[in-house]
Image 1 (cartoon, rainbow, N blue to C red):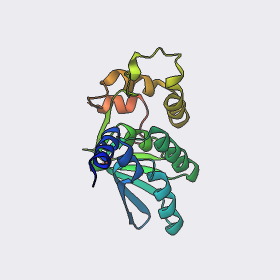
Image 2 (cartoon, one colour):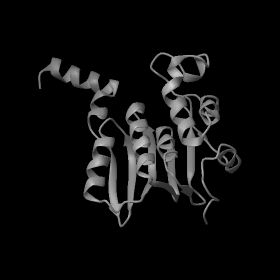
Image 3 (cartoon, rainbow, N blue to C red):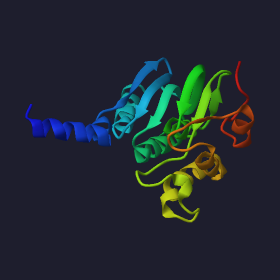
Length: 190
């Protein structure tokens, strides 16, 4: 590989372009469940649709270890599709779902989690500034704020995430916080 091509590949990798061009998630069908893990990219919704077309019995999206998303718009598009299909979302006792993975979890018409699962949130960063540094009326908030309001009936959880931790940190939500913002549609399962 020529040096200039190698430099381009390294630069694109550093910018997240290469990672976003491939699907960073793994999806496995288990009866009527689609088990998802990894990082959500721009390719994830397309692969999700392909799997659904081949497996119309799927009723629940189970997230195991979803560390977030490198494409917020793709995550939100997939979330709206999950909601439109009436799918449930579920976290197993060993699930660890952070950032954009939490946004996807909110899409479930029915949202359940087993005791021991972890939900982590933080502010977003657009490359220039932390989301929490923008005034509340800033249009930078609109996409995710509106999505969360559509999923939960209020945007309060969105504002909480901005203050919970900076973009390079993570805040593991407590049971009281999960209940306060209505992230689950029923009690925590044993």
